[in-house]
Length: 68
Length: 159
Image (cartoon, rainbow over all chains, first blue to last red; front, side):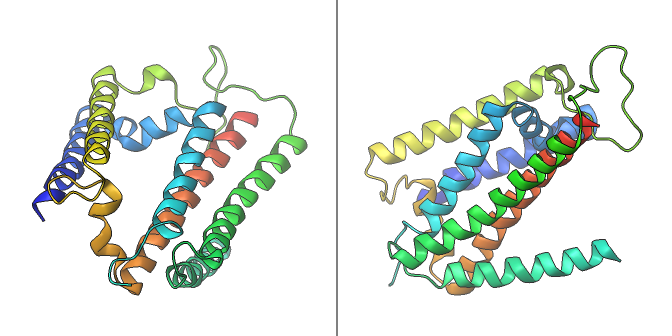
């Protein structure tokens, strides 16, 4: 459990950054707007799509389920 | 009514697909087929939608260009200046922290109890069929929402 603490902390950090950014800059300053900015050009879209496909294959096709 | 129907059909499709993907054995050909087919269906729908839009419309017009007026209801493309600099710096720092932590975890072997990789930390959620299916559903919804947004912004840019 202690090993997962840094990941939980980073997830909480993301939540805090998103909320603070929205409070300061409105709805156009959250994580969604940063991702939209990345996706506004073709290389960014390809990178995001590749990251999404990699996550799916890594977690659901190439990852051993504990206990099986 | 049409939108509600789409939501119901989409929810049922995602539910069935995620349950199927979650039931496959890792490293088996069925697992690759299940994940690959799910991703290919979403990407295929997106490419088909984008191709249909670009072939049915003329040259793209950038609605954020000076002097152009975005059409009512269109989604404007984000400009680099539209996201405040401190916000960009904060997310860059956060991304660097994630990459650094993952690199350190990989250097420790990936399955260290002191610092596991992100996928090892998700082990607990992948142990049961239902929680695994929920993660697959979240992955599919994330992809569908992302691709849907890109398709909408492309349509708005080409309108």
